[in-house]
Image (cartoon, rainbow, N blue to C red; front, top):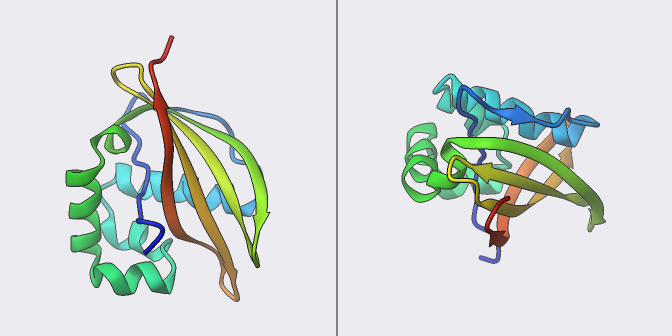
Length: 130
């Protein structure tokens, strides 16, 4: 599979640029759900394909907590450019971790009858912050 699912999780001191549009709002809502340790709600923002891969909110949450510490407790989340991608879009997100490193992620978003869902996230790069 080309994309591995990843959710961004906000810590209590999260600085976040304001979401613009419904696709960014889904990412922001997933962050809020993770802040509350509400894995069921966070899992609900994942596409059916991602839900099928992980099978349960608990497995999904464990993957995020164990596999992606830099997004589990970010210092800041900033929404960058969004571009059309197939029938959906790709939303670039910059996450600054607690150590000041910047992580760039590309969210693949799909639009369904029920609204936008996250269909995968790809790491684009990391750099030292300032």
